[in-house]
Image 1 (spheres, rainbow, N blue to C red):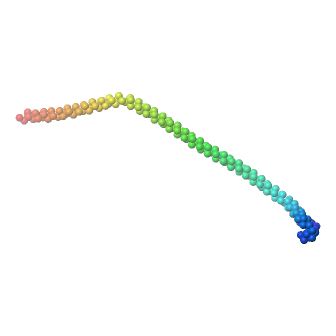
Image 2 (tube, rainbow, N blue to C red):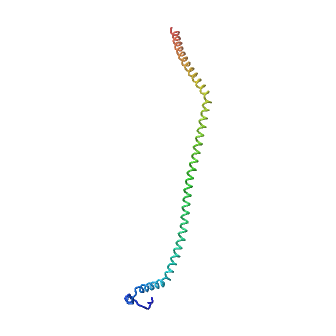
Length: 161
């Protein structure tokens, strides 16, 4: 760095008598330094800007993917809810259909009982008649058995006088 002609130390400046001039001189030196390093600084800033722009582009793509992923997750959640409702609707329809079939079966059973009622009464009458006949048969068998015994007794009496 080139030194400018003039006083170099603060003693020399104060000897000259003006602190203000010294401060201005230091500001000019700093500005000259900044100006010289500014070219490098601009290229550094430019490379940082390029890197940041690339990073921004990458982040934009990532943001887009994230938003798409979020949209897909929301859609999947909505579809899951729709599937649950569809299953519910199907089960409800099945239950309603089963209730209807049950009611129809009750009506058919009631009609079948109505149709069978005359037959059941006939069956009950026949059972009663059968029971009566069975009782009569037993009574007749007892009588026949008594008669046989009596006949045997009488036959024995006749044979064995």
